[in-house]
Amino acid sequence: MSDITVRAVSPDQHEAVMHYFDMVAYADNPNWSRCFCMERLVENYESSTKQQNRARRSALILSAKANGLVAYRLGRIVGWCHAAPKLELLNVEGTKDPKVGAIVCFVVAPDQRRQGVATTLLEAALEHLRKRGMTAVEAYPVLGEIDTTRWSQVNYLGPLSMYQKAGFEVVETNDGSGVVRRTL
Image (cartoon, rainbow, N blue to C red):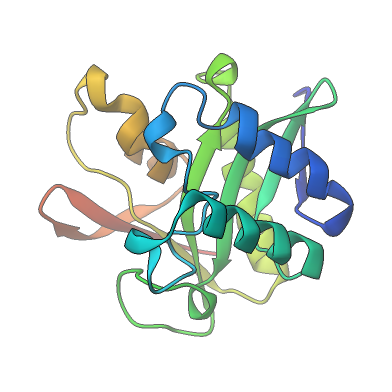
């Protein structure tokens, strides 16, 4: 039995989730510290500042409209997964089928990587999307070998092997990245 629990993000988690993004999630990759998992939610992400993205994430959580799952271990957040209906996301591959969900991000605390956190989040995301009426789910991992110096920079999408173990199949390839899909 896993000691990881997963919850859908909710307003009562606001402070813990913001602390996770502020202090833990990007501790080993400060170049991402402006993200706050807003890349797929705003049109002007490239020109958005850290402060703008932080304010947007905060407002989403407090509004109870935020999509996302958080993993807890020993009472602290150790992982994040952004899973949502494709209709609610910008800049994702393919058509916006209202019955298709998308998993676009994993951020696991540096000291918790390679311990099953992302796999546990993926399993919870599949169930979460199924409960929201999705009949299929897609994700967009990097394909092929990943240089160890780039591991954390590309695995935020989730490693292909994790998706394949969960029953996803590659349905499209584009210049080193792909679309994987699974029915729910």
